[in-house]
Image (cartoon, rainbow, N blue to C red; front, side, top):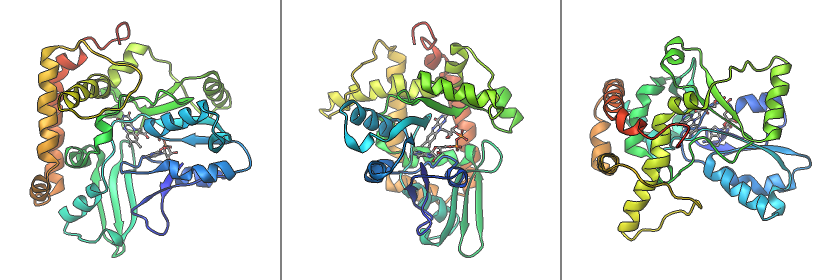
Length: 316
Ligand SMILES: Cc1cc2nc3c(=O)[nH]c(=O)nc-3n(C[C@H](O)[C@H](O)[C@H](O)COP(=O)(O)OP(=O)(O)OC[C@H]3O[C@@H](n4cnc5c(N)ncnc54)[C@H](O)[C@@H]3O)c2cc1C
């Protein structure tokens, strides 16, 4: 699993957890770049069976190695993973700190992305005793400024190659209630067996929902991955750039959706420049976050029709 480094608490660190405490210590999403698969040699040396937790790209690599019968993955018995919208470069943390007048990320003692009650806060505790905190929905303003390109070239939102994947249950009813609800999906018999057992023993409360409801909870994410990525790859092909080969292609999107993608991509390009980052760091994150959340909601509402069209269980 992916925890935070003890020596350099601003960095993520994959490790093999062998106790409940260690598993819990690695809870919470890390929305910055990580290299989980650097742990493969340790996985190979481990004596015993392991459950692996990773993002879709990392999981896909493990599945390919399993298919090839590679010895490094022979100990992996289960694969779990979170849903995956995007990851940010480490520059997001540096920029966030600079916005609060802090220059040195090496003074970070604790870094959280989902601290406290769901959906949680981005929170940084510094050596000086200062704590900086911003609600997740506001900290999302960092996304267009620091998003990693591979998030935009990924077609897998719900971690399709896992035994069990989990995400946030984004729905107004749950969001208003707070407390935190997750969506969980079993994708194999052995994944389902774990859920059944946990439910039987009272560790999990599961409320079944229909496929359509699950998709509509994540319609923006599905649109980003199942339409956006294929359109972005098409644009890249036109520009003579290479794309990942996922073994399938989705097409037949409306002209409006293609145009919408041009707007989105232009924003990513403009906001990702050093100049835009410089400007945004001069405005208090609280203000930027609020403006970002409001504009994102307006954008979501105004593009809802384009995004939701054709996105249902029967043709999805
Ligand atoms: C980069 C990223 C993007 C995400 N995007 C979305 C999204 O768009 N929509 C959505 O619904 N949910 C998304 N999630 C999932 C969501 O944030 C929660 O992780 C998910 O709801 C599971 O929460 P939990 O409390 O059940 O899991 P937790 O108990 O918090 O366990 C999470 C597990 O994931 C591992 N982990 C955390 N971060 C990483 C990482 N970067 N790489 C590999 N393993 C990691 C941890 O080690 C831990 O084992 C994302 C998660 C990540 C890490």
